[in-house]
Every structure is written in C-alpha cells, then in structure tokens.
Image 1 (cartoon, rainbow over the protein chains, first blue to last red):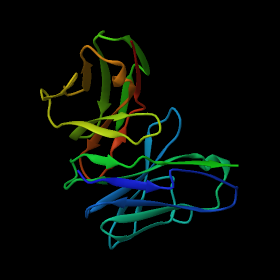
Image 2 (cartoon, each protein chain N blue to C red; image 1 turned 60 degrees about the vertical axis):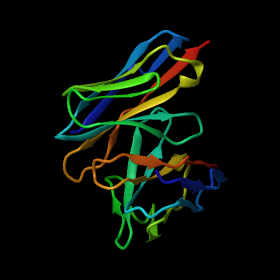
Image 3 (tube, rainbow over the protein chains, first blue to last red; image 1 turned 90 degrees about the vertical axis):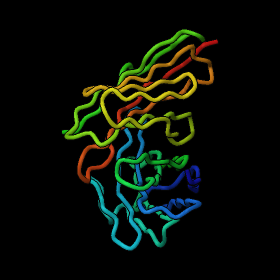
Image 4 (cartoon, rainbow over the protein chains, first blue to last red; image 1 turned 135 degrees about the vertical axis):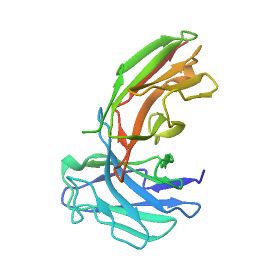
Length: 115
Length: 110
C-alpha cells in the first residue's frame, strides 16, 4: 500500500485562527478522506475529497468551517477555520485502495489543541 | 441507522492468555468489515477485510471471523506488543461512508 503522511503532527492554536493540515500520498489515489477522532469516540468522517470535484461533506460539517482542497491525485489539505476549543481533536486523512469495499489507509493524524 | 458496537471497551490480559474482541453491527447491506489496530499517537493500521459470513482471516496471533451480525478478533497467546486499541469498521451498501466502532483498548501484561 502507498505511504501516507500528514503535517503538522501537532499544533497549539489560538481561538479565532485557522490551521491548514496537509496530507500527502506517495502514489496516485482516487479517493481521499478527512476524519475527526475525539477521545472515547468513533472516528467521524468530515468529508470525502475527490480530485477535480468539490468535496462531499457529511452531516454536521460545512465547507465554510472545514474547506478542503484536492489539487491532484496525491495531495489534499483540510483547513480548520475560526477555531474554538471545541475543535480540539485529532484530524486524520486516509485514502482508499480502488473500489468502495476496499480498505482505507490512514495517516498518523494531526493533534490540534485550541487555547 | 447503521451502527457498530465494540465490546469490551477495555481488556487487560496476561501474556499468553488468549481472548476475543467483539464487533456487533447493524447495517443496510454489508460490503465489507474492516479491523484496524491503533497505537497511541498513530493512525489506524489496517489488519483485515472480511466480506461474507463464514469468512476468516489470520495474521500471526490474530484471527478475524465474520457472521451475519458480528465479527470476532481472536488473539492467541498475546504478547505485550499486541497492546493497542483495535477498531472495527463496516462499509454499508451504496455510497455511504465507513461506520466505525469506538474500539477496544487491549493491554497485555508481561
């Protein structure tokens, strides 16, 4: 499977600011995903990022708060905008091998704390 | 509503003490069930995919099985390095996203 990396690995930010998280895969992949993982909770899908089209957001997540870019088949970014302490979480990106019932592979996440 | 429930939430084993983790699911048409391992500070690492009831997969001390309602991850003679959180996820039919359980935190004590 392809190697997937995220940066930054962690950050501490002030409320009201924005942070962009980068996700890089070392080979071309069709589907990339962004998740949020909060302590004691399931991974929650924020959006699906496909190259050449707008990201598809899940219920409870909006583009103004979590804008996503997917400029090519190996890279995506997630921005967390106008941050508040409730945005403190781990943000994970993943990619999927091939068709819809193939496994996803995850980066190591970005640990974000908002003061 | 598609749902995944993992039990127990936490499990503490002595080294060599075999046990099983459970993943119960209700989903509208199962396209696949996935097991992941997650170490502290890391992302989930893919272990197994199961597609149909009766299917089994093995890797070292781990064996995953699947029925129409649940999956088990059997750990045989675990070692301390097997300590991690094990996540289960299901892929429903259609264009719906993966549904994850909350995980089982496994601690294996030497």
